[in-house]
Image 1 (cartoon, rainbow, N blue to C red):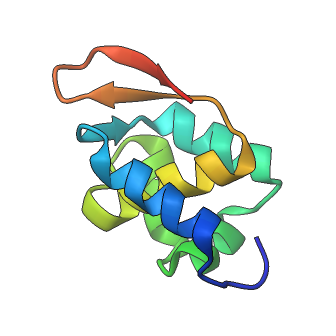
Image 2 (cartoon, helix red, strand yellow; image 1 turned 180 degrees about the horizontal axis):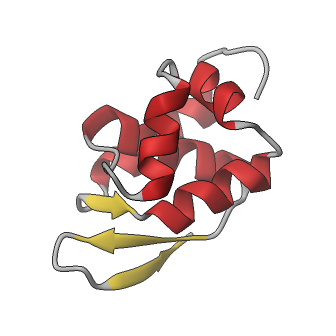
Length: 97
């Protein structure tokens, strides 16, 4: 992921993610995204501004990312070209491009 710079593409990703209906990230999708990015739990945590323990808790299903964390995961997935299954609150699965 590297340097952070806000540009048109980043802004577009933010707007897309915010316009989406609230979707939940499942533990498998989080782990798959991290592996797609080639990151350890520690490195992903640093990139998202959270703790490694939080990433571990998401990946084991102890907790789910909410709010800003879920939005950030969606943005990262979009920017990296990762196809993922995000769950709606009703537990239906839907592919997100």
